[in-house]
Length: 466
Image (cartoon, rainbow, N blue to C red; front, side, top):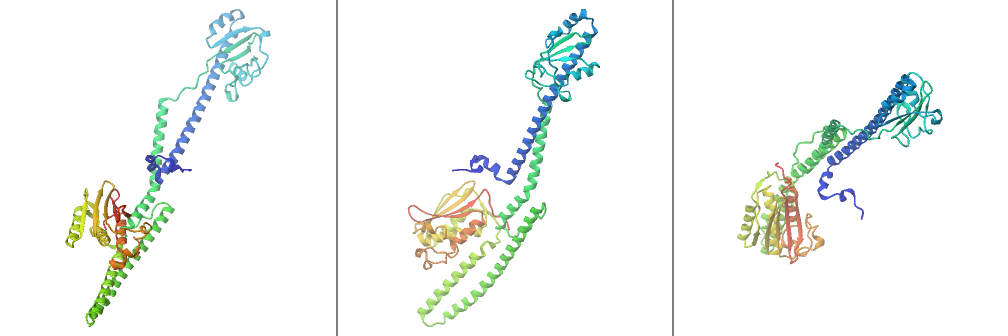
């Protein structure tokens, strides 16, 4: 199976490439590093060329000095002068006309020597390419041949005597970069990297702010709008987000007013019906009417409680979850219900007390209603607080587990209206879990019954004070 680049990366490196900031920074730094290496390579080639040219010009200067000295000496003393001029890398020999090499050298060696001497000298070389030696290339550069370690020329002096000059200098690489230059390159690379990081951070900061605002939107609709600054695209995204936030807040406010009106308008006729039911003489009919009115009132309360959703303006604060769970267990014990609590919460949890109490109470009621008892297990670590409620009821069909948290959904007859409720208890718990940045996980126990886990994250507590 073919994997993409992110799947091929080690787990420890994925956070480094997951964000847009990291990816843009890596792309720009890789490009700058490639450009720096290419520049260094070109500079190294240019240094090699300059060094080669300097060595060629130095050889030409030595040849000119040899010619001047020999031409200044009488023919009888030239052997003595040659002995003084010879060196380990320069062989000098007087030859006859029959020994002269047959070809003229390519390049600028003849013109260079003539320019320095002030007059032209005839020069011959072994082969058209300079006999394995080197001529002067265009621009004064020494032409490199098959054996660049040897330069061989036959030069005719001004009195007709031929002189063979063989340069046997050892070819070496151009000098390495100096420590100062390396330090300067490293400092330049560091400064460029810092500028890139700052520039990328400035470019991606509006996106990070947008993501943070989107995360906080679910728990705080009254958060201040995003600053509409920066590039055109960033401003347009901030404007669109602010318009969306304003529309959502307007809809929530309208729903709040509608809920208040519905609550008042429904409870008033229900109260009148309850009073009129008391005037009915038929006791059986009166009890049936009272039962229906109680069911309607319960449905209205549950529906309004669900529709209020995240409008609870309660302030988030540290909560002693151990005390909260124990108080709910004690309340159930007063009613003759069995609640077992296992485990301890290590430290206070920051959240909304009333919402969390309602969520746990709904789970307890659900467990007692269908399993006649509840077992609370607490798993707490640095990342999340898990409150798991288990019952011994019939459980839920696996195909229905994902749907039972939908409003008004009731999967089967075992959890029918005759047992009470209208199918909103788990929906309310799920909304409260989402309010705190967590989740509600439902699973069937192998030994029978339902396990409901309220997972509340500690590492990224999503609740913010209202």
